[in-house]
Image 1 (tube, rainbow, N blue to C red):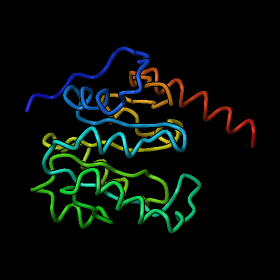
Image 2: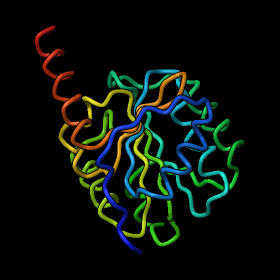
Image 3: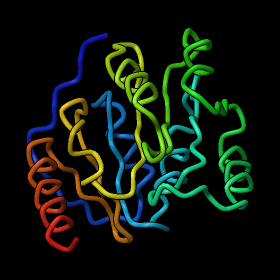
Length: 185
């Protein structure tokens, strides 16, 4: 499999057809970070974008962006995502995922929040796997600052479309957001 080229440009896409946008990005890029505010539909859009793909796994996360345990509604949400793609395999840990790795072609990772250093290392191994497409969902790009170079592109979803960011531009944005957070503390 030929390694996809890194995205060197930034583009604004004015469209509500975000699953189609993500689908076209998946054809061009291997490691994709998807960011956006709560409620923009990050997970729903990703699952809809891969609905015709085989070997899709979803690594759930019981922690939200604040590091708190997600509410009970998360299991209902997972069921809803499965209704969009009923052949998607849900796994609860990187260990479980690594045991099934031969059948994994695409991996949706629900956040890095609350994950320990061993889990982050496992994520890095997945990102380094040339035969695996990895889509990491996070709320804010600043949380990816230390690992942005491992991705090919960052997609910031909005209510009206998407912002496709080169890794260089994503790093600048993350740096500014992290500085702002430190000055607010």
